[in-house]
Image (cartoon, rainbow over all chains, first blue to last red):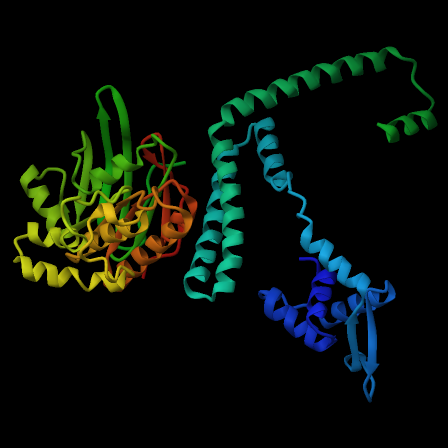
Amino acid sequence: MSVPVTLLGLLEREPSHGYDLKRDYDLYFGRGKPLPFGQVYATLSRLARDGKVVISEVGPGEGPDRKRYIITELGATEVQTWLSEPIEPEPHLQTVLFAKVVLALMLGRPAEQYLDTQRVAHLQRMRELTEIKRTGSLMDALLADHGLFHLEADLRWIELTAARLDALAADVLAKDIRGKDVRDKDVQARQSEPRPAPAKNMAKDARS
Amino acid sequence: MTDVEVSPVRPIIEARDVALSFGETPALRGATLSASRGEVLAIMGPSGSGKSTLLHCLAGILVPDGGQVWFDGRRLDTLAETERSALRRDHFGFVFQFGQLIPELTAEENVALPLLLGGARRSAALDAARPWFPRLGLDGLEGRRSGELSGGQAQRVALARGLVAGPNVLFADEPTGSLDSLAGEQVMDLLVSAARDQGITVVLVTHEPRVAAYADREVIVRDGRVSAYASGRVAS
């Protein structure tokens, strides 16, 4: 969730005070993670500094809640751009799990077990989200659906990877052997070279 | 990894080390699992893993080559076909991927069918079938035949048919497999709600995680065995 542009979007409905913005943000987007007041006012300050909002009036008394924020043309353009441009598809969501699987295969550890463990965690979360869907509002259901579809995509990846573990293991080990071969030649080449001066050696290590 | 999966509560339906081959091809190689009273259990697994075969063994449709199947303290796999048939009729309900409604019958006659087969009078069976229509969002469709129903409607009629006789266990084999996401969710929501209302145990075979997420617990079948890796909340 991009907080600045979301606050801008809320301001596009109507000018608002920081307190009301936080309340609306928490209501629509917080989902158990309320936005800290400090972040709200810091964000609004940056938006004002960048010309995306202006402060229309300062009420009596002191404190940030006296300020009323209005979105500018620049701010509205940013909201429009953000809304109309697709979010960049994430090709690396599985980076951590992928790294775990490859390393497990490389190290002779039980990759299938790690995938099973992950599957259990995913299914447990899916069960929780399904219960939210069954018992919550339509907005809750839509958000839960978003999570469910993503988790399902991960699970499909887990299933496919589990089915391909033998082939993947062979591939990983082949790469490892090739890498080892290259490293061995590199070691042999270095061993045949005259020993570099300590300072140069350090520089070489830093580059590698 | 072990091949033993144990239900946390006293089981109503149980497979113990069940094995079954089709010709030379082994489908189950010692599958063990159980479901407790009122529990919704999902059996997951890739195509060809043996999950549907396991369901058919649990339901007494197939007889395993080895191992045992128990229902409510009674051994099922050693019963004669007529006894198993009676047990299925009196205690089990079924929902399959393609509703398998009888096209010549109206929707309410399809729902009443298990009661008619159990010897109920026609009027009594239809009286028992009708309340399921508003309950499953099928108001006004009682007189339609299966060809006049959408896929989701037909599957809800099939669900009503599976539940009408008040079974102890409902077996559902890919019950949303032929439906789009929204219709599938409606069926699953109704299936789980109805089962929980009546304390019916559900054994649900699916390869879809989103469907399995409606269950209290899921197990994975691989190569004819039940994986030890499973998760879920303990059924109350």
